[in-house]
Length: 382
Image (cartoon, rainbow, N blue to C red; front, side, top):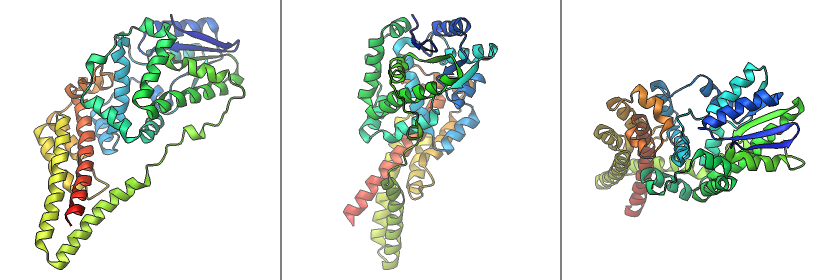
């Protein structure tokens, strides 16, 4: 049932499902029987350490995520994991169990382990940066209003035995978010293939990777010559300079107008401008916090913080709303443990850890929209 492909006598690929018990069994058997010199695994060092030490999200980690502005990336990662489990792939196995089994079995047999995947943070950041506004909106819409009726009940056996189905699932991802699909699928196929190729000088190589990457990696490995330059795939594109202009330009404009009105003594104009700025910032931040089903105190915090934090690019209203949400609806140890195991989009709200991150992300979105709308209103008025 588990697809295995021999590139030649010295290189074998195993396509696994990351939540399949059968995958764990086959990986262990292949290492014992085939006796490779190197086991190449679809993991980066950070994911490998997390699997080895069973690292979970904790209160300190949640605060760090909020402070470093990584809430959208963590949500994005969780949504991808949830999509995998929505397809009926969860057999009660820890995601990545077969990858952990590959590491442990190789180490027990004194076989070299090679981690051949790109760092997860680079992958997520490249996907996020490459996605256009429409793609991000589609993902956000799917998060806010998940379409449960469209879920398919696909069993592990069917997924692993049907390469056409795997292709269809990959193509579906590319339809929803083409740029993200390119980064998550095509780029990683090339990255994995190149890293696996680099191990071939060491002898027999057994590569353990997700079944969705099997056909792409195999096709690239069969190409000659194989481009070994990965610098372009490890580079995180910088944000559009226009964002920095907006981030600093809007506050400077507001402060400039305040100074102008104070200098000219036009109190009515000052009052009107500050009212426009405050109302739009407060209302839109509060609405978005409410969409995340934030606690009333978190919503109030969002409304108070947004007009102030929008004037300082180093601050974000979502940080304050998220901290309040975390205090008044503190996630339990179970919430924190289960967060990355969410199996339905709607559980982003019922899981307290997920809701904290939603409050952070959506409040920041509302605050940003509020600043834009308020700026447009001020320009139109004055």
